[in-house]
Length: 326
Image (cartoon, rainbow, N blue to C red; front, side, top):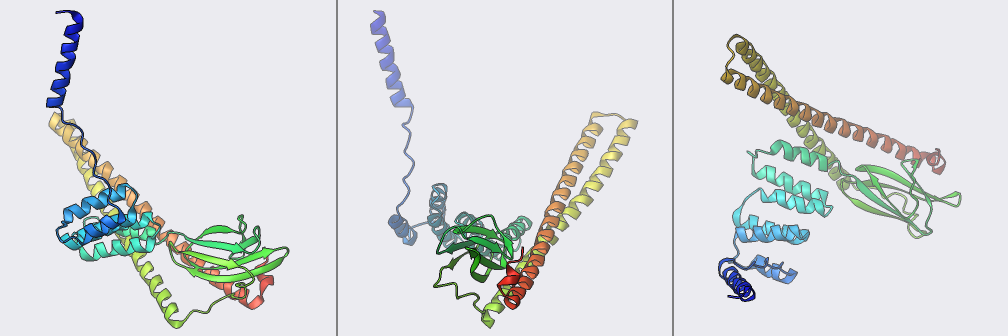
């Protein structure tokens, strides 16, 4: 047989073998449209597993609202509390920190034996420290901004990240005060402050008793959550420290036994105990740092809120002159 004919025959046989033995790649299922998703979620034949998988695909495609709807449907069908953690992830990526906290708290409420309770409580405590955003606008751009009596670098229009709590914002332009507003914001909240002539007269809106009560309850709830997270991480640190100390003592004893009777078994046991002791000490240090950071951050935040409240009172009593001192 000629070389050319032989080569063509081999190519034909190879192509036939590939066609018979290698399956063609299957296309990934397309993502549902909003209308298809709505129909899928109300379909009585939908299973919890199917709803969960659709949520995963939507989450990977960054369609977080659709992923949340699919996972909430999966929870309604299967009652798996861990889905609340997945929903919290979607809300956090959409900038809805309060919504994420609500889902994490619901997870802990429905799963009292949650093995990751300490980490979830620490995550909640971290979310409660999420900054708020003040969007400051004025009729003319480029006006100076004072936040709690301190000039900021940004000029109007500007977005300022602030700690949750009460803040006093003053806008100054052309050597005179354009307006002043006191605002209370929660964690992860965005509030717009418009300093145009039509709105600058609205310096401060007095809170109703119900609003004040809700704000106080929110503060107490946050304090309780932070306290629990500090206690949880502190307890983990203490337990890990005790465990590391015990394991270190046992490793030391094995080392003494190895000196008297050097065997491979004694050496291996001593090395394992020493390794576990190091891991325990590392966990103790990490938990202690986390607990201390949460405690000090929350303490400094409360201190700042008291200072801002005092500044707000002084500003109202002394007028713009006291506010503009810097």
